[in-house]
Length: 346
Length: 109
Image (cartoon, rainbow over all chains, first blue to last red; front, side, top):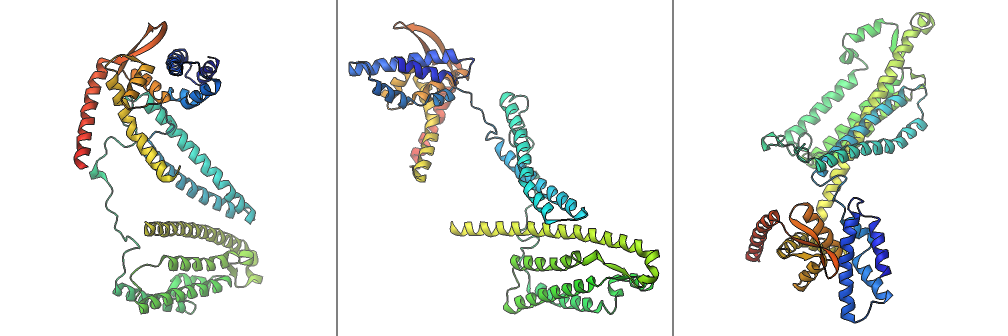
């Protein structure tokens, strides 16, 4: 039957080449016997349409041939949980390192621009893809080794051979460090210390030694002074503390001091970024100036430039760290909220 | 196919997979070639697709559970399979396991 020959020819193309003649001969005799039975039942040869239906029922040639292939996974079920765990961990670290390196590169450039930040952001998926590719390739090789040499490395698939329940990490406290309900005494203490801190903060302009200690005397005697940007910075810090304190007092008054409020904390941290932005956008980056520029410029001018340059870069690094930390917290809190929502729907 | 039907189909295939191997091993206590084996199983109510049965025979042979030989019958060369010594031993163990599972399920039901 020509149709059967064509079918077998198509199957042959997808069979493993070492055994294809043998498999094909067996398949042919099985299908021919089946065909003979069908024809004997009907008392006539199958029509072309019937033969087509019969072969269609058996399945596409590629599917038949695929069943003769040895079972091979790119990443098998034994290794997959470890693969997925490593993938998440490595991707996270790769993104963190990439984020820090990119931020340092951008801010240490002479003219940091939004374009360079955008370029770094657009490169992030490529970095992630590269990381995923290397992790997958490594595990695919591991799978290949385990599948072909199971006796050589019996400990590879999945879990370590010396796994023991005694080596499991200690139980994580439900609230540690931030979820534990606050006691009333703790909440009151936070408000009291908040007021004390605010008082201390407000006294600093008048008594700088409260912040700088003996350094205040040195600054007074030196030809340098703090630039005007620090005034705005200071009042933003005061405002931030007032808002935070107000929020805590409100929580205390409403009897809502027990649980932490992630949205509130994130909002405070976002608010806390503003003073740093004010400093960073200060025209000319004049964090330290000369008290008498007309007299001291020739002697101390270069020193002031170096100090300002150093402070500017230090502030950039601090700012990047705060932003990354904030982004991480937002992601964590969003995931928690998402999980809660899913759990609520179940 | 609805999601429920899809879940059912996957579970059904999973359930059948092990049973088919057991049925093939049981049937091959007598010698068969592919097509007569398929017919014999179908007559006992176990219909197996060609695309499942024939590769399964090859796999079981590679694992040493079946022995095979090419022989002429009705003017045709056919590959006949039967349970090997190792296959008989494993079949016995699998049968015990299956009977234990079956008994447990029955007692649960």
